[in-house]
Length: 323
Image (cartoon, rainbow, N blue to C red):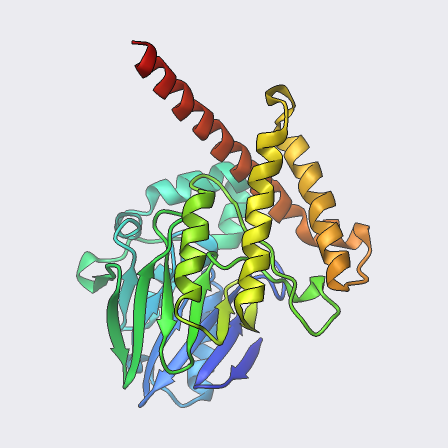
């Protein structure tokens, strides 16, 4: 459940869906604490238990920081804020309104999961008071003790996404911008990284730019929400970017009538499994598909929506020219 990392950072498995799916991180400096990512309502008990083990009063938690408002990242925010009396929520400018009034987030998630499953996953998500919120504009910073955290706008996965640069560890808390690396996928000593293109705001050009921004800081490590800390260099980011470009190139090479969510999903399964085999994994196709089922469903949805949106813009531009 807990993994002590260097630089006074503890990785917490949020327990969301299954072990090794989603992490949040506890940062310490001079007895002050920040929590990056929030999991769901059940994650709160894990955070509080860790604070107790460390003899850290709840009052010492200064900041709760979801990288964006998708519920696997921000679903536990209101529960944590209720439990941490001195904490302030740090949020992207475009995501703040959904923390003040989460009704649209809740409604959207219920469409995806259904009422019963939503309740089991996320419980009762409450509004967070605006007075307890800090809007983190691009390139703004905060101190946790003597530890500086810098917030950079990183759209591409979502327009309400920032990543958090930790100067002390020379590492990024990446949210979904730097992809996913489930430990269960790779039986080598190197993580297998793949992009997330979930709906509805995936934009490949913006995502590639965001990844390049992160690499420009010469990071030594990435703290992935999905899942864990990985060492990083340019070769890893190049492989991630190459996958994003391949996604786009494949869709744009297909006859329009053949582009469906199912065709995209089937191509993603085959393409990603081939990459995983080249990576050196020996996982079976059946196990691979089982682990990745939700990601393939969401990624294919996101890619289809991106493609349809792009077509609509092109058609609108053509109509404008013809007028």
